View 1 (cartoon, protein in one colour):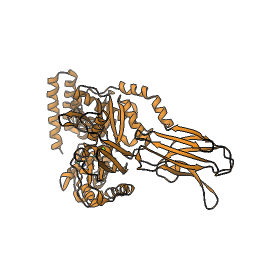
View 2: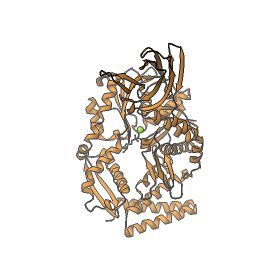
View 3: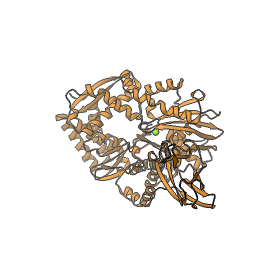
View 4: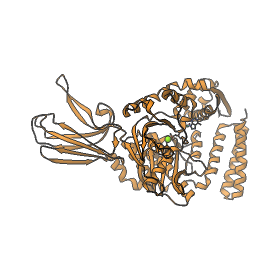
Amino acid sequence: MLIGIDLGTTNSAVALWQNNEDGGEAVLVPNALGAALTPSAVSVLPDGNTLVGAAALERVGLKDGATATSFKRLMGTDRKQKLGKKEFSAEELSALVLMSLRDDVTAHTGTRPTEAVITVPAYFNDRQRKATRRAGELAGLTVRRLINEPTAAALAFGLQDKEEREPFLVFDLGGGTFDVSIVEMFEGIVEVRASAGDNRLGGDDFNSAIATAVRGRLDPDGLLGKIDERRAEALLLQAAERTKRGLSDGQDAEFALTVEGARLSTTVTASEFEAQAEGLIRRLRDPVVRALRDSQIDAASLSEVVLVGGATRMPLVRKAITRLFGRFPNSSVHPDHAVALGAAIQGGLIARDSGLEEIRITDVCPFTLGIETAEHSARGTVQQGLFSPIIERNTPVPVSRSGVFSTMGDGQKQIEVKIYQGEAREVSGNVHLGQLKVPVPPRPAGEVAIDVRFSYDSSGLLEVDVEVPLTGAKHNLVIIDEEDRKAASDLESRRKALAALKHHPREEATNQMLLARAERCYEEFLGDVRAVVGDRTRMFVTALDSQDPRRIADAAADLSGLLDMLEANPPL
Ligand code: ADP
Ligand code: MG
């Protein structure tokens, strides 16, 4: 079975293509808690068991939370995060999320999926894409294709209306990344004309803005300064998230949290939020302008502006978009579901489901690919380390382009072709992908030319062909960088190590969620209240140990009743 996965920074989701009498449709698969979105959070419990999703997210603020979030931002890097006794890379944490989604599909359909289409931000570079692919493999899934998130969203929207050839813009503001794409659909062809973005901008930043705004007045007695700094930060950000959602539905919202038994609270108004978020709102403009310019489409000829990503639910974001484009955006597909649905549609295409009309996707190469060159400056010196693009950013793929380069020195015996990806003028600012030594016959400077051809397809493989016309010699390189080879070689042992981790049984998800919430409350309150929370929690744990479903249900009802009451009316 082939599934479609939106592996998000904040939330992930999984969807399936289902055939029916009208052809077919993509449907989301709920997780063990019945929700369509699974927070991309991983926790390791003191007993070594791992938790994924909402229960893991509950543990973020705990003293001993051992929880990782937003690790997608570290994809493609070597950074490891220590959870409990073990260290995890972003790739491995992502694999744990993918395993959890895979298990949700297994539980829902009775069949274990073996293949997946996974989405990535349009702005992901080669290294980040490969890391995502490996995460899928670590989770035991064959990754049939990686597609850009905006492309997936376009597919989700496209099946509803695809009559005319009119470009539209996908505006995707998630928890941690911002992507803008200009897409065209015509007679079954989806073409991404341009994409741009900011992979450091998202809903999380709006939470930080709220936390910063209230910090000065929230805590006159400095209670937050008395607890662990990281925990204080987590509590503030969790409270800010609630406030932000409140502000999506009303003119003001409470900002409240409980620390050391005391309740701290204040009110945030929409206009205060707007003033605080002004800098973030301003940053939304640049990628839009760049995408329009790269595609040579002006805002007026866009047929629509499509909203994707949970953060586009903020009224101030919608207002900014309306102002930017001079029209109201379209959010007819649920902004948080579009990407996963699109991935499932793509999965359906790959599986050549009969229910689906033929749709092809034309993607673009999201970054510029080129080689290092040197140049004689006006003063007669040689400037080294310059970047010469061969395939420009936003060129539709598959693509094959070539450039001609010649020797710089007299009697030069070889040309070193160093391949880079990026947008900087000097190669030092770009990502080095590989190199190739090409022997050439010694001649006076500038008399030997080489032809360098780059071929790039949507699977992300770059093929480099170099020809020396003078001798007819040909050289070829398929780019798989060193790091990648290293990572691939120990893939099998890493997969085994992950598979050996104990996962919390799926059917216990609700109980784990309750337990995490109880632990959070225990840490938030003091004195008698804390003792009562502790007692009821112990009773619940004893009930869990008994494995008697009725006892467990009773203790769970008791505990959640108590927590509901405490959270609604915290004792002062
Ligand atoms: P990602 O693609 O990064 O995984 P999502 O598309 O799921 O993210 O969006 C997550 C972001 O959306 C979070 O920052 C979350 O706070 C925000 N969000 C979700 N619902 C709302 C809402 N009702 N109001 C404001 N922001 C919201
Ligand atoms: Mg997203």
